[in-house]
Image (cartoon, rainbow, N blue to C red; front, side, top):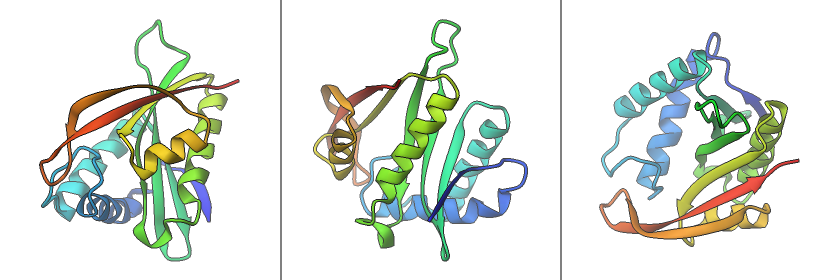
Length: 171
């Protein structure tokens, strides 16, 4: 497995793989902002927008690859306000179903934390569905639970779900 930063100038050919990963995640019930029926065309359009945002420096996207293609991704979203040069959000962590249980998520989390440190971002924030596999991953990785908000997000099937917010202070 290789984890690297997406290069907006040279990695456009990876967009269909990112879109397929996202469609799979939503179909599998991941609450990552999209509803059931989300398709490849919608995902491709969304990823084109993220590639443009990455080109503008608004987000850094990490990609995990194996011999068969994209197996995961996570994004670092630096805070934009002048009083928050030390802060960033972690967003859109996804791991291919075929590689779950092989520590891809943990490796992506370690890599995005290292990227944040390299950029001087020492306070990270993320959110996920309460009690999810992702929540357990974050807790094992030393993320501090800040709190839960009931009925915060819709699952892809339309069911309301609670969300847990986490933070991590990096050295």
